[in-house]
Length: 413
Image (cartoon, rainbow, N blue to C red; front, side):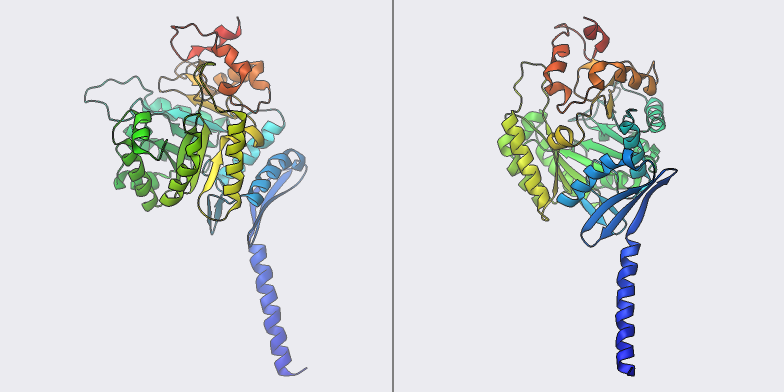
């Protein structure tokens, strides 16, 4: 063999070895526990989760669903060391994603876990309280106890939501308080008093994603929904400042009969702004008499969802029409629980029922109370406030009753 041929073979061998090494380096361990190991295979454009061990059968259903989404849809964000499939989910790989896998194994075995706990921090929305205002809100110590108890029972997503949580003075302290090895933290905002300093503080506190609601591309229509002049411009400004600070940003909206035709224009705005994800939630009625989106509307949302996520360009789209309607089923009272600013514990933000108060009971006890009702033990593909069976309970609430109303009073009738 000539020296030239030997040198060429050596170069070829090194190239093959380097390629194999790169492939090996992208087989990342996601989870390792007795009876189960989960790995992420990342080769070129291919992302795939694989499982081995005696618990593989319990884990496979959720991995199959996630792999299907990774194969057919673009992620919200891809970085060197992680993939964020959706801003609503923890990064892959990572310690919080391990908790997601463990929670889904528990659910597969019939032990449902409130994977998401959403907490209302304040009633402030379009403006701050006047000096001297005494607000009926959970104190910081109680919110921290809720977080502690949620993490203990398996929660891996803490969301500060409703009104504008960023108007609560202790919000940065509360975001920092969440153990980022056990849960991600999402936070919504109206953009009411949002500055570059706010964005920087959120980044420093370890916020996973910021959710900014936009309800119309017409500023006047958005302001009318918010009942606050200038709300649209403040929300747009918040999105831009958050992106400049390096935050993961989601532009959210609610699909209702009045704005369903505007979803393409809203997505175009999200693309123009450069957010990571455009999130569409079906608007929830307060009573069975209110107009709601139709099955044709849902088909339209799903078509848009699949078309957008199959394209590599522009932001990813999230739709609870798919996530709850086809992927996991209804979340409220099954994988989700919500705590109001007064401490009432609900299956989610929308049902007008209380199952206890966190000032008087533990989170674990109230979750078990929710799960004890046969309705929440059924697999549903509609959110409770879209489900005719659940709306029968809503119709039993007395006309002048204070909300949220004790669920046991309507269930016993």
